[in-house]
Image 1 (cartoon, rainbow over the protein chains, first blue to last red):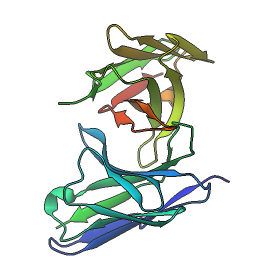
Image 2: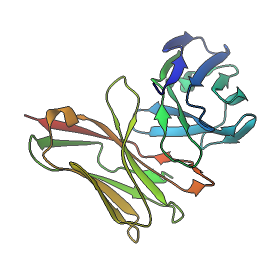
Image 3: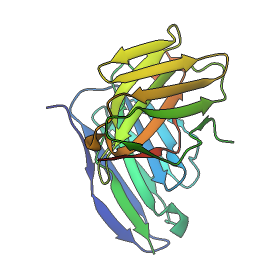
Image 4: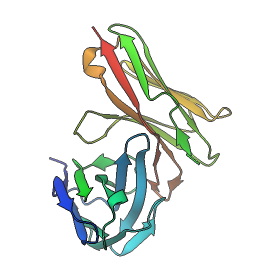
Length: 112
Length: 114
């Protein structure tokens, strides 16, 4: 069963704390993505990774960094979280040669 | 500015009617267009997509119309059902060596009333 798994599902952090959001996929997809979803703004692309250690900024990369050391894992890191990073974060993957995105269930992050 | 825009945040349609969802884009280089469906607290899933070399694609009750000169595409859902109630996200992008950096619209919440 093809799957994109995100952990954790819900997370509450205090301003200034570090945050690690994990994403895994079992489909050997080359490309992985991190989006955030905010009311009235839809899904905004934070980072895209074309393969291991081949990452590229999306439209809103400021305040975020990513790590992809294995094809099946893509992590989103917030160093010193800010309250305006409260959002729902979606990870997605797509196979090479295809544009279809397969999304994880999302992580709802609250930064107090 | 918003590269992909859905001007209607919400739409209500009677059961059995036609739902028409609209999306405008800015970038001439976009060559891939898609509609995703999202239920509350669930992840978006692909409904239907089309490449720029066609101006229409049908799949059951779903039809995507692409108007390249107007930089506009739409999703028509015929015989709308209550289970079609969801948020619909349009997306567009440019195929870059096999993958596309998809830009999403803000979403339109469709409610099908019985």
